[in-house]
Amino acid sequence: MNAGNEEFLPIAEINKLRQRRWQSQRHYLLKNSEFFSALWDGLKVPHNLADIAELPLCDKPQLRESQGAHPPFGNYLASSEAQIIRLHRTSGTTGHAMNVALTKFDAEQTARIGGRCHRAVGIRKHHRVAHCLNYQMWMGGLTDHLCVETTGAMVIPFGVGNTRLLIQTLLDLQVDAIHCTPSYPAVLEQTIDQYFPGMTPRDLNLRLGLFGGEAALDQPAFRRRLEDTWGFKARNANYGMADFYCNFASQCEVNTDLHFLGHDVIYPELIDPESLETIPWQEGSRGELVLTHLARQAQPLVRFRTHDAIVITGTEPCECGRTTARFQILGRTDDMISVRGVNVFPAAVGGAIGEFSELSGQFCIRMKGKGPHDRISVEVEVSADSEATDELAARVENAIKFKTRASAKVMLVPMYALPRTEGKAKRLIREEEQ
Ligand SMILES: [Zn+2]
Image (cartoon, rainbow, N blue to C red; front, side, top):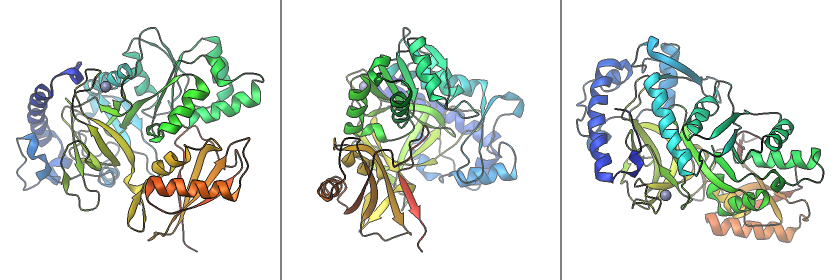
């Protein structure tokens, strides 16, 4: 039942495999998942995977409630506790950390699917990869590390913090690839400036910059700037979510869009985040990504809402030989700002800002109250050798309007006025109305 290199199989073969896996997963859930047995009470649970939209969606608040009522794993735990070999905790942004349990089967499958992503971005046996994600209970640390290891590359478990030591380590060990969040290079650049006089990012000789966790890399200008500054290939290596699979999509070496690389064990759907209607899975479709596990033991999920809005950019086989669909992330459905009826994502604003050499690329959108909004208010940082003029602000406002179709009020701020972070950058702050 374990997965191999199915991302290269013809789609028809993958579909047969998924249908078989759904049949046994369906049986397993009905027998072992109290949560889904209750959610589906009185419903006919389809045998055919294509009919899965007949089942209700599930969402994170339900899982959180389930863990509150049935600690620590929730009643969507379908394996025995004795089968669990690894536990991760996810962010407590709403105050409650979630416990994510993996059986041996789940852990191996997770490493295999994640490994496909790292192979797709070009990691090979000869690479030395500094893994700079959080190891403290987070999936991005240990579990992603194990995904990278499946490529045969040497992985250095650096984790987060102590940027100065990291730079020294990259030099000492002649590391040629780094795996971190897209906002982290800005922190590294600042540290090099401060502590390594005469050195530039290019002097580190990194060949691959592997990123995940944010949509920023989908902006060509941001990617170009990273590659120009560092001299590495910037690749989107990591898309996933802890409750589901920590990494199941990445770009390949010939296309910058994300490939779904777990199609044989995941059934993805698109829905309209407001009406919850299903949107056809085809090139050009936009909607919220909904995911179903087809082979999972500990905490299997069916029709799980990710709250990530995506656009499918290709369904034909890619030049690289992978057959599964490609997509781009538009943003979090919670970060969607409605400006006079136009839906705007912070990443699109970032795309417009990234086109200006006079700007550092850092920005923060501040919106008052729930709306409706007439325009976007955004603080934008100028680069070190540029001046904040009204003329520049006006040009940035025009560029945002052109890219997003929404009006913007731009306030230019000096270089380093906005905070850098090694975690996910906060691009949108919703302020309470006075
Ligand atoms: Zn490809």
